[in-house]
Image 1: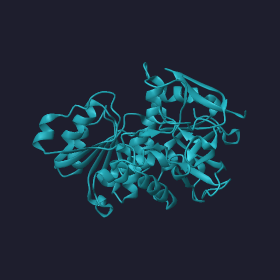
Image 2: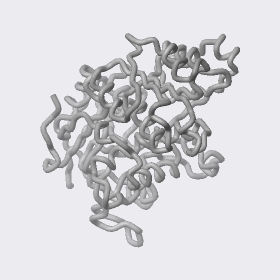
Image 3: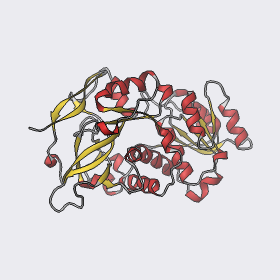
Length: 361
């Protein structure tokens, strides 16, 4: 039996890199065996990692933001050995009303590769992936950038939920609350859509993230030090911003967004809340705020994010990656994101020794 190295979650704060069997390409329908190059660590991974009472069978392999190289494809596949590919990790029934409508994130049977209920995981040497979930990486995109397509697709879906034509974003005033990976991805997509950086405000309390966000030419304020509502009013001639993206997921962020918005503005929640979302009633009611949620992305949006990257539409995405770790040190990568959050936006992990670079300080 051929073995590989993989990071498996055994319990709260217990991630072990160990030998497991290389997955069979027949593990899923029209399965293709992919050798992983890079895998990003997501906020949902951190949530599972620290959960005291995880509701899933242990251990399981983690990682859903990954790319790699095809090592084995089935007869008749459109892919062949050596193809560079990035994975859309969503798993749906493909039969329900939501799937047929292009609303894959709302499929009642939605799962993800590398998350509970899904198979495999990108924090390993090999993963079996259904062919339809694999997309060839254009020649002008490196593997590290390809590993960012999944979070960028999350940001693209959020921007689409605002229902603003790309040609109109340049006139919109926008507030982004939270400059972590999700906020960064939303900002990158707004810029790709033609938003005016002079009409955007981003809130972020940590110094390193703040500096990375400023590379877009936008104004970045600290929610701990600055008056966000006042800044939004000044940006919009006293009216309030037209769209607010909540990527922070905190009670105070929702309140700030509602206070900073103009009447009949649009509030879009992109964050995953650990508790119930409490809406500040008076501003919501008096201003007739439109509230929307944004979860994951559709298959079309994943492909669009890859296309936008190939077209060079995503600016400053290199700054999104703040550290790189070898798979053997995956537990340390998680520890860094939990204990030194202020130093990081996105950490990438690789099982390939040839990819290993010095770890960020």
